Image (cartoon, rainbow, N blue to C red; front, side, top):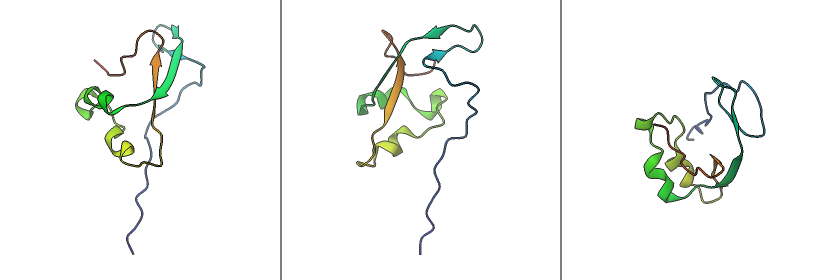
Length: 79
C-alpha cells in the first residue's frame, strides 16, 4: 500500500488581521479574495520566492485555490 503524502505549509503566522499588513511599517491594505487562475501561475513560481506549490494544488479538481490580493492591486507575485 502506498503511503499517503502529508501536505502543509511551513510558515509562521504572527497575527491574524482582516487585511494584508506590512509588519515593518504597520500599514494595512484592504484585500480581495478570488479564485486563482492558470494565467496567474506564471508569476508565482519558486524562483520568485514562493514555497507553496500552486501548480500542484490546481491539479486537484475537487479543490478551490484562492489568492489574497490588495484592493486595486491584483499583482500576486513577489519582486
